Amino acid sequence: MPESAPGSVSWDDSLSLPQDSITPPPPAILTRLLRKVYGNKAAVDGLNLTVPSGCFFGFLGPNGAGKTTTIKMLMGLAPPTSGTMELLGLPMPEQAETIKANIGLVPDESLLFDHLTGLEFVEFVGRMYKLEREVARTRARELMTLFELDGHPRKLISEYSKGMRKRVAMAAALIHRPKLFLLDEPFEGVDAVGARLMKDILLDQVRRGATIFLTSHVLEVVERLCTRVAIISSGSLVMEADMAELRGASETLEDAFVRVVGAERTSESLDWL
Image (cartoon, rainbow, N blue to C red):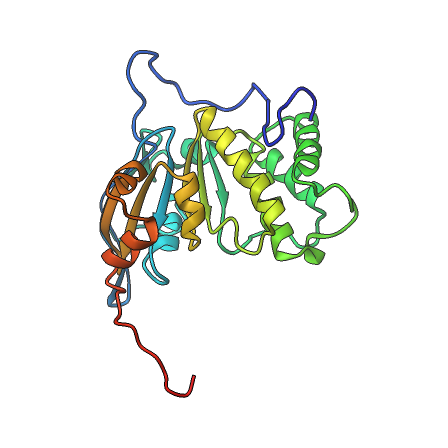
């Protein structure tokens, strides 16, 4: 991309929310007593979460803990049973249209259009965010090059590998320069080269003032990237801390995760194994 460092985007006509230059920005995400019930089971149960603006935030938990449900509520895809949410200082769902215009989403299940090429899909997303046609087209081409997806321009998304699908989903999430990224397992199925590229791009976005809200089962990745983490188990928040606090306690993120979700087990073995 012209005049850009590797792993960066340099567009300067991004969407923005009005902010007082003196008053510190509100939290990027603020939830209070957030609850989502399916049948008789609470997938998320009284979640109080504060994600500072400009933070690389890791949202962790075992399978079925409520991470994806939380992201669906934050995006307005699943209405909460009770509780409140604010994103970028605005109430959700009351200000859903403004909030969504400033969010980039990489879902756990890639909701892509299989019968479009990657370039067509990214350009389409840009147009959905009301970018001018030529701006959307130019940015889409630049992003396809940045994510090294421009080698087969006629290939349909249905022919993409899982890693390629994650890359094109990330490209689509970037095209409108959002203030907040909601990323659900963005590195799943991505090879080492692609993952490094995606990490560099995300870190560059944080340096530019964006907020990253990331779920991942790869704790080493979270430990390297995130400045703050929260751990959810059975729908409830069980820990929230700065990564520096964990390191100061001489505890790895894996140690903290195993301790707080109650997954410690005595060493066992099978005689036949």
